[in-house]
Image 1 (tube, rainbow, N blue to C red):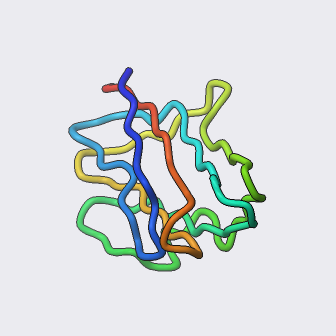
Image 2 (cartoon, one colour):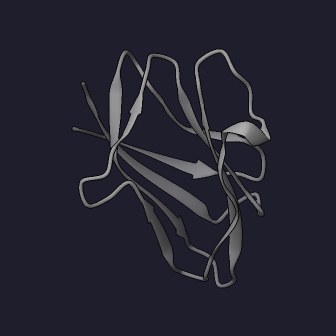
Image 3 (cartoon, rainbow, N blue to C red):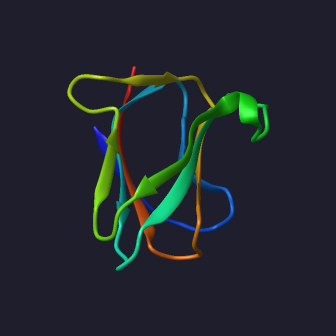
Length: 104
């Protein structure tokens, strides 16, 4: 397995791009600030663009100094070559992502 970390901004930030076929086995978003922030999360098939049809979480609130976990405890998100996960935060800084993935 491999781990990728990304600082998320207030514009669409790609936190993971699949190379060949992969599975996300763990994804966490952490708010390092003293106030709540929100995020939008999109899972985008290769060749598509960010739209409401690939939105998996809208205005998800993450409390101050808290984390939100997706794809844990045996859950997996299967992705094809070029598929991406993009996150947009309500602030330019303060949200960080950790994604663990493996080839399938």
